[in-house]
Amino acid sequence: MNSKINEIVKALRMDPHPEGGYYKETYRSEGVVNKSALVGNFSGDRNYCTAIYFLLTSENFSAFHRIKQDEIWHYYQGSSLYVHVIDQKGEYHRYAVGMHLDQGELPQLVVPAGCWFASSVKEIDDYSLVGCTVSPGFDFEDFELADRKALINQYPKHEDVITKFTRS
Image (cartoon, rainbow, N blue to C red; front, side, top):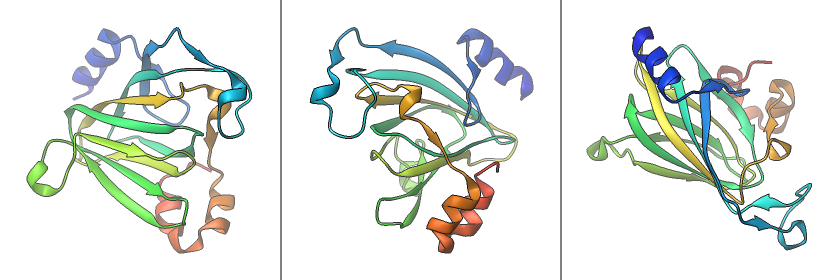
C-alpha cells in the first residue's frame, strides 16, 4: 500500500497538508473577487475558485478545521472517505464520499462555509484520493485549525469525535 501512496504523491507532486494528508493545488482562477464584494470577514481579494487533489491514508486523518467558503469534495479513487461535519447549529453529521451509491455514499459533498469538518479513510490499510473545490478561492488566511479544548467547550456533546479528529 505504501508504494501505491508514494506513487500517487510523486505523480501528482503533492505536499503535506497542515490538517493532515497530502495535497496539490491544480487550479486557481485568474479572475478575482474584490474584498468589498465578498460577504463575510475576508482579509482581502479572493480568486473566483480554487481546486486541489487531496490524499489521506487510514493511518492519518484530516483534523477538524473550518474555512470561510463552501468546499465541494469529489471522490476519485481508493477507499471511500468519511467527512465529519459539525454544522452551524452544532449538530454532528458523518457523510461518506465514494461510489457505493447503494450504501448512501455520494461522489460529491458540499461542506457549507463556517462548518467545522474533518475527514478519515473508511477502510483500514487504504487511502482515499479526492478533490476539493472552493469558491471564492481558498487562501490560508481563511483556514482555522481547531483547538481540541476550545471545540469541546463549544460542543461538549461531540467530545468523542472531536478528540478523535484533533491533534491538540
